[in-house]
Amino acid sequence: MWELIADILSDYYLLIKSIHIISVISWMAGIFYLPRLFVHHTESIKTGSEADKVFQMMERKLLYMIMRPAMFSTWIFGLLLVSIPGIVDWSFVWPWTKALAVIIMTWFHYWLAARRLEIQVGNNSRTGKQYRMMNEVPTVLMFIIVFSVVLKF
Image (cartoon, rainbow, N blue to C red):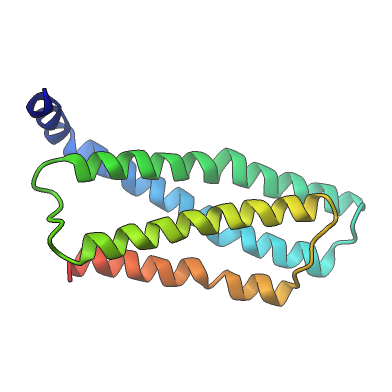
């Protein structure tokens, strides 16, 4: 049975890889943009104003309509990729560093979701500067992931 599944996955390797890359790009676009929205929301927008409602709508739609589906798709197609025999040699360090960075990126995604809820209820305790600093987290993780996969160290 496993051989049949492995053969099917191997036959669709390039399609799976393509969808995985598209999913990653979509997820990363959102994960870079949402903290920037938080910066402007916290620094420039008065709670309860019309602009506050617009920002909340933008943040909610970005998180739930783009980022969350892209994150799930990234995970699904990434797991399909590593299930294809011969694609990943787990005796190397690189798949483990990539996996850890993706897990941290997922944590960061949920951290952003929690911050969105704080802003929504008017309980934000973070400054624009703090959101700017946190916006560097996905950049560092992206470097780790890309160098791990490309250089295979």
